[in-house]
Length: 144
Image (cartoon, rainbow, N blue to C red; front, side, top):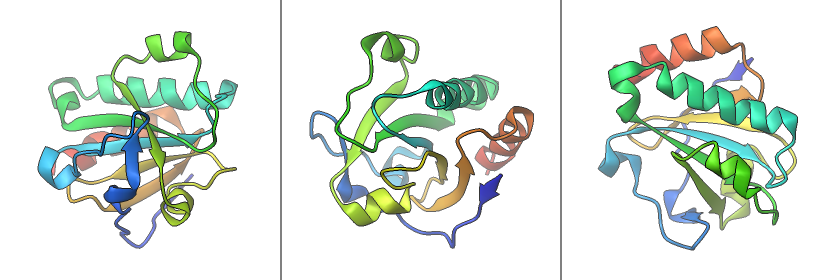
């Protein structure tokens, strides 16, 4: 259900908010990043992945502040406003470099990426991991 890439640093200078603003590097923010890579149209599986990451973050209780959630929009589509209202803590981002986009899931595939506080890609999950296992593993990792 998950891949373990060889700790790869996704070049944060190539990740931008949709308005073009640069992201704070995790080393600076001190937070773990959960990055869902999916097209802007966001079908049912994508919506489930976003829901799961929101629930996983909430399930961490007082440690939830140690996690930031991002949606890497992998195409030119824009998410529906209603979907964004359901996820107020979700930040939309885009990749300005094809290699970084490929590293985080590619333009056609859908993944949930977990990036540690140093900015290293630790795990890549399918867009439909087993919820309890995902929540439990996330909880164990963010304590470090």
